[in-house]
Image (cartoon, rainbow, N blue to C red; front, side, top):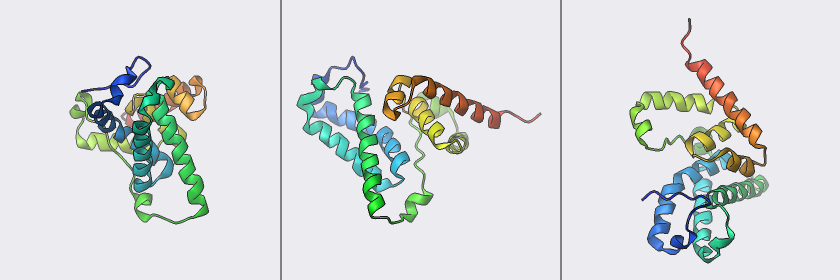
Length: 181
């Protein structure tokens, strides 16, 4: 079952454990990728996503106070990720694995099934070459499916900035993909 967490969502159904498990499975990877893009640690990203989703389950009776669950989840991930970075700065250590391993999952949908593994890998490499902010905005909009306004709210930037960053990302990717004359 595909659950869309937007403003028209019936919050009461999330009180059902099976529905909540489906939401957990459906959104874990997207939220994990976002957390990982901030903290650059597999373990920390997983823990942050688990904490946010478990906290959501514990506070399921307060859903009516949340206007848009999708935005709430991403803002929660951002806040916990920034808290993690702030705390880690006090206890600096290097995690060799996280320095070399970039999370590069591509969600499985009919369109991505048509793309070969090699093409997907090449596209992922191109996306990873984008400037950090541009890459994050591109992934949030094009891969995670957030709306421009949601990304703007999440990153505390204007909708126009989101739009401009996407234009930059698409132009850079297109320049590289354009065959040489």
